[in-house]
Amino acid sequence: MKNQIILRTKNFTLECWRFCFKVPKSREYNAFVNQLIRSSSSVGANYRASQRAKSTADFINKLKIVEEEADESVYWLEIFEEVIPEHKEEILKLKKEGSELLAIIVASINTAKRNQKKK
Image (cartoon, rainbow, N blue to C red; front, side):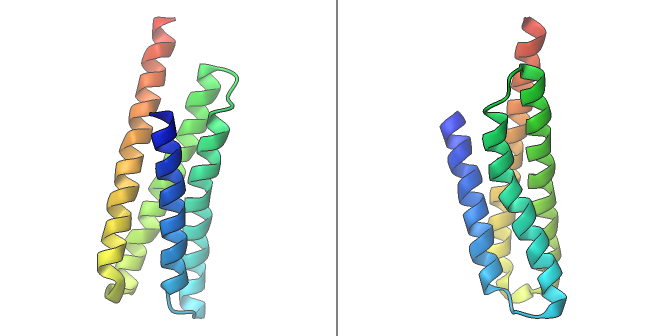
């Protein structure tokens, strides 16, 4: 499961970056592009950091950061869906991927919490 999440976070980040390179270069889009790149990049980096957590509580806290970043990425994709309708199919695919990743992360948090309570 862990390797699958690492692969999915990396894949999500790369797909978001590829999408951002297709966005028309203009001042009005640059802020959106930068936010999407930042949040999607943080998903993978923060997930890797969570794997080096020293305790279950630290792991849960770091996963919550990953959850927030994935949620923020989906939010920016929703913004793009409104302002760049010509890329709607690709945006919907990315949103679906981001939502699935978010569900996996939430499930990981819940599993870690259950395991923590058992100890």
